[in-house]
Image (cartoon, rainbow, N blue to C red; front, top):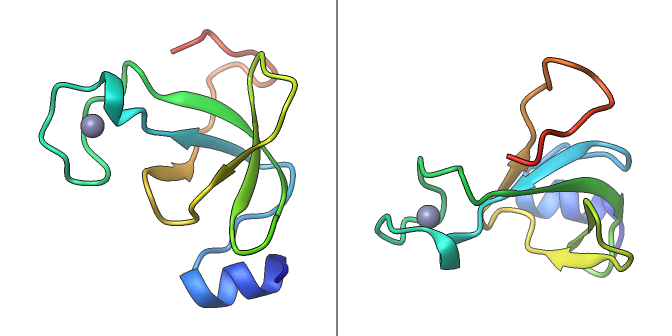
Length: 89
Ligand SMILES: [Zn+2]
Protein backbone atom coordinates (compact mmCIF):
# COMPACT_ATOMS: atom_id res chain seq x y z
CA UNK A 1 0.00 0.00 0.00
CA UNK A 2 1.38 3.34 -1.01
CA UNK A 3 0.60 6.63 -2.59
CA UNK A 4 1.09 5.00 -5.97
CA UNK A 5 -1.30 2.20 -5.06
CA UNK A 6 -3.97 4.66 -3.98
CA UNK A 7 -3.57 6.77 -7.11
CA UNK A 8 -3.75 3.75 -9.38
CA UNK A 9 -6.58 1.95 -7.65
CA UNK A 10 -8.81 4.98 -7.16
CA UNK A 11 -7.72 6.99 -10.19
CA UNK A 12 -6.82 10.07 -8.17
CA UNK A 13 -3.69 12.19 -8.28
CA UNK A 14 -3.57 13.62 -4.78
CA UNK A 15 -0.19 14.38 -3.30
CA UNK A 16 1.06 14.92 0.21
CA UNK A 17 0.77 18.57 1.13
CA UNK A 18 -2.41 19.24 -0.82
CA UNK A 19 -5.40 20.89 0.80
CA UNK A 20 -8.40 18.58 0.96
CA UNK A 21 -12.08 19.01 1.65
CA UNK A 22 -14.15 16.31 3.30
CA UNK A 23 -17.89 16.61 3.06
CA UNK A 24 -19.44 16.09 6.49
CA UNK A 25 -22.70 14.51 5.48
CA UNK A 26 -23.73 13.84 9.08
CA UNK A 27 -24.29 17.59 9.40
CA UNK A 28 -25.90 17.93 6.00
CA UNK A 29 -29.63 17.97 5.24
CA UNK A 30 -29.26 16.88 1.61
CA UNK A 31 -29.97 13.35 0.34
CA UNK A 32 -27.06 10.96 0.67
CA UNK A 33 -25.36 11.05 -2.70
CA UNK A 34 -21.76 10.75 -1.57
CA UNK A 35 -20.85 14.25 -2.52
CA UNK A 36 -23.49 16.94 -2.52
CA UNK A 37 -23.75 20.64 -2.96
CA UNK A 38 -24.17 21.48 0.71
CA UNK A 39 -20.71 22.66 1.72
CA UNK A 40 -21.24 24.73 4.85
CA UNK A 41 -20.20 21.87 7.14
CA UNK A 42 -17.31 20.59 5.08
CA UNK A 43 -14.01 19.96 6.82
CA UNK A 44 -10.67 21.08 5.47
CA UNK A 45 -7.23 19.75 6.05
CA UNK A 46 -3.90 18.76 4.59
CA UNK A 47 -3.07 15.42 3.02
CA UNK A 48 -0.15 14.15 5.07
CA UNK A 49 0.16 10.44 4.31
CA UNK A 50 -1.22 7.39 2.55
CA UNK A 51 -2.01 4.88 5.30
CA UNK A 52 -2.82 1.54 3.68
CA UNK A 53 -5.33 2.25 0.92
CA UNK A 54 -6.56 5.48 2.50
CA UNK A 55 -5.70 9.14 2.56
CA UNK A 56 -4.26 10.42 5.82
CA UNK A 57 -5.67 13.89 6.35
CA UNK A 58 -4.78 16.27 9.16
CA UNK A 59 -7.87 18.39 9.56
CA UNK A 60 -7.43 21.97 10.61
CA UNK A 61 -7.26 22.29 14.36
CA UNK A 62 -6.73 18.58 14.96
CA UNK A 63 -3.58 16.93 16.24
CA UNK A 64 -4.21 13.50 14.81
CA UNK A 65 -4.44 12.24 11.29
CA UNK A 66 -7.76 10.94 10.05
CA UNK A 67 -8.07 8.19 7.48
CA UNK A 68 -10.30 9.08 4.59
CA UNK A 69 -11.45 6.89 1.74
CA UNK A 70 -9.89 8.29 -1.46
CA UNK A 71 -13.15 8.67 -3.33
CA UNK A 72 -15.75 9.01 -0.60
CA UNK A 73 -16.91 12.56 0.10
CA UNK A 74 -13.44 13.96 -0.31
CA UNK A 75 -11.97 16.22 -2.94
CA UNK A 76 -9.16 18.64 -3.49
CA UNK A 77 -9.97 21.92 -1.83
CA UNK A 78 -10.63 24.81 -4.15
CA UNK A 79 -7.82 27.32 -4.13
CA UNK A 80 -8.35 29.86 -1.35
CA UNK A 81 -8.63 33.51 -2.22
CA UNK A 82 -5.89 34.30 0.28
CA UNK A 83 -3.22 31.60 0.39
CA UNK A 84 -2.22 30.40 3.82
CA UNK A 85 -5.44 31.35 5.53
CA UNK A 86 -8.57 29.42 6.34
CA UNK A 87 -11.77 31.19 7.15
CA UNK A 88 -13.30 28.06 8.64
CA UNK A 89 -15.96 27.47 6.05
ZN1 LIG B 1 -24.26 15.90 2.17
